[in-house]
Length: 225
Image 1 (tube, rainbow, N blue to C red):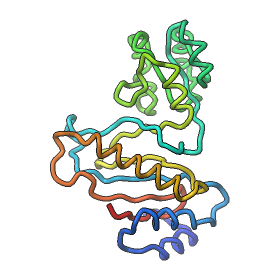
Image 2: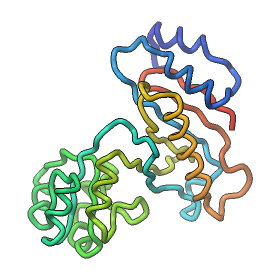
Image 3: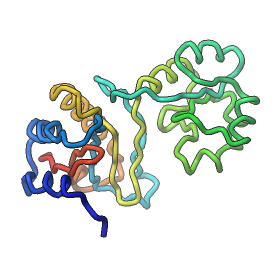
Image 4: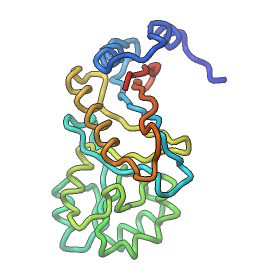
């Protein structure tokens, strides 16, 4: 059983046992100021999908309207002609053979990897290394694209990747505790709307079963759908 701090338990006692409106939930999340850093705010959706079925998996990426308050370190696997545009767009490293070797040798100091379709045959050898860390480029989440520079700029600015877990839940950071209410609400509404739009055709019954938001070190608040 995970032990909770006195602060966490106190904050939990202040919460309603029933789901509340999004505005009220955001206001409550922002009121938890007992930790000394700007907490990230996460939105979690429990989906009515069967995660064991390939045609019901939910994954992708989204650029939230107000960002997430964090810059990401992005690299780009690309041909020579795209190296400078990728770096100008914010890539910390760009290239192909040399970059693949650098990563094979153990360098993993980045958050997102973008790849051009033309070099994916070479990047594939990194699957066993990058796959378990969630850093392997994939067309499904927008990290394999011919427009490398645009993808780099979007992900460097905080474009959010997501995929359902084994329990059929989707987790995504939607901002910082310091964000104004309107910005957090706007980001959350945009995220939920996007998830609704990509509902798998094979998913039957209630699609979004539950929703909650939480801070990095704050209790989760159930939100009415």
